[in-house]
Image (cartoon, rainbow, N blue to C red; front, side, top):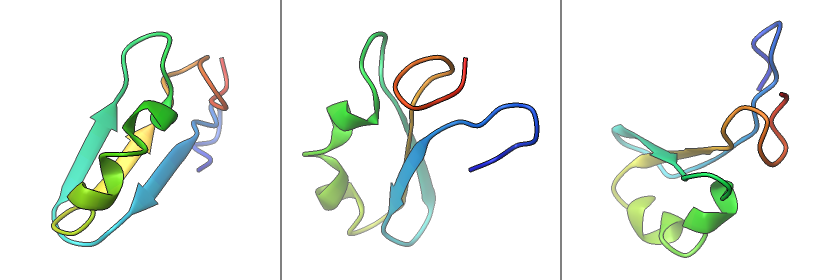
Length: 58
């Protein structure tokens, strides 16, 4: 996704109410990879890399 100045990286899946997943430093969205499929059955899951971590811009 592109916000203009900053380009954060996110992985999404599922449908329903939005559920934002943030990993603690130094993890990335990849820390949620095993839990996301189960959560995506009931929610629209959005796992974001924090700024400057993973594929997100610094």
